[in-house]
Each structure stands twice: as C-alpha cells, then as structure tokens.
Image 1 (tube, rainbow, N blue to C red):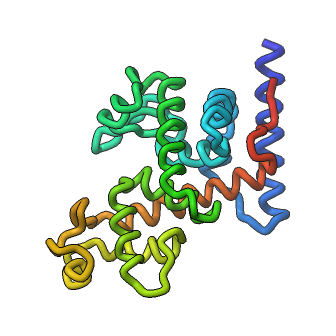
Image 2 (tube, one colour):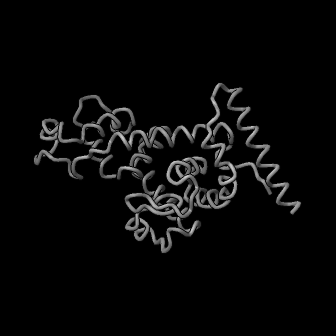
Image 3 (cartoon, rainbow, N blue to C red):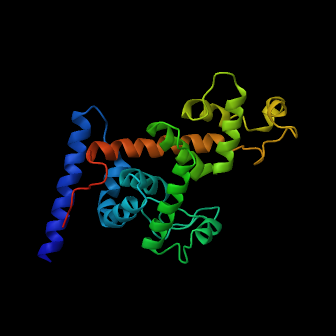
Length: 228
C-alpha cells in the first residue's frame, strides 16, 4: 500500500512538473498528455526495452501510442487496427505478432515495423525522417514512395525532405491525373489514388506535437524518469 501511494505521489508530482514546465516554456498544457501520464509510466519499461533493441527514440514511440490508442491495449479501430500501436491484422501477422492485444507483443512488433520504415529513408535528415516514417506508418510506405516519385519529377525538389513529399501526398488524388500521366504511363499512381492524405498529414502533425512535448519533459533520448 505504501509503495503504491509513493508511486502515485511521484506520478502526481511529475504531472505538476509537466504542467509548470510547459507554462514556463511558453507551451499551453496538453490535457491529453497530462491525462495519459500514468499510462506512459506504466508502459515506459516495455517501450524503452524495444526502442533500445530497434535503435528508436522511445519518446517517439510513446507519442505514436498516445495518438494511436491513448495507451488502450484493447483498442480496436473502425478499420480493424488492434492494440496499443493499432497494428492491422495482416501487418501483425507479417511481424510475427500472434496476439495484438498482448502489450509486449504489440510494442515489439510495432518497434520492428518502425525500424524497417526508418531504413526506407536513410538519406533524410532526422526531423524529416521522423515525419516520413510516421506518414508511412499511417498511410502506407507505398503511398509515400508514390509521393517521392512525384517530387523527383519536379526539377530541383528533394524527395528525402518532408516538405515537398507532404505536398505530393495531397496530389495523389484523381484531381491530379494530368500530373500522374507525366510520371506514370498508366496515369495512375502505382499504389492507387490516395484520398486520405489530409488525414495522414494531420496524423503526422499530431504525433510530432506529442513527441515535442514529451521531449520537453524528457530531454534524454531514451531515459524516462523512473518511478521505481
């Protein structure tokens, strides 16, 4: 009982520190992050374990989970994505995740998947790489590759940077078939039209927002303050 009270007191203290530090640094408090602070600390050990294993920033993984499920290990989306990191059943199977609702399997599988996505953008600067990976996680790597192809078609544009790729993602719609015909003989992007680009762009911005806040609270790349 005493240990439980101590842990709760530490978490409450940290939540207050997060609130004050945000105000001091000119950032209004993020209610969602404050509400999820106990969950972040509950799962931080597993997040760190697999982030270290896959050479990821644990804070970004946490930010992704905040957006994906709000740390609800039993979450099921309208399209069937499962668990903390909202793995689709086919993706979970490919990653060897037998039970997407098992917290450790889910985090381990998503971490492996994120590592493969980072490998897909080796030439991108870190900030751009984060955003390209998140867009791929949400919208599919194929969509991002199609967007990069559109960027390459523009003289002087750099497909390793998020800025031009984010613009190109919004051009993977039927309204831009003229442009598509200049790039692909069929006039259709290899991975099909992408009508949900605005959702993916918003997703990237939200995760990066949470990531920025978590980095403010935890400056060290992989080390969370321990409550043990």
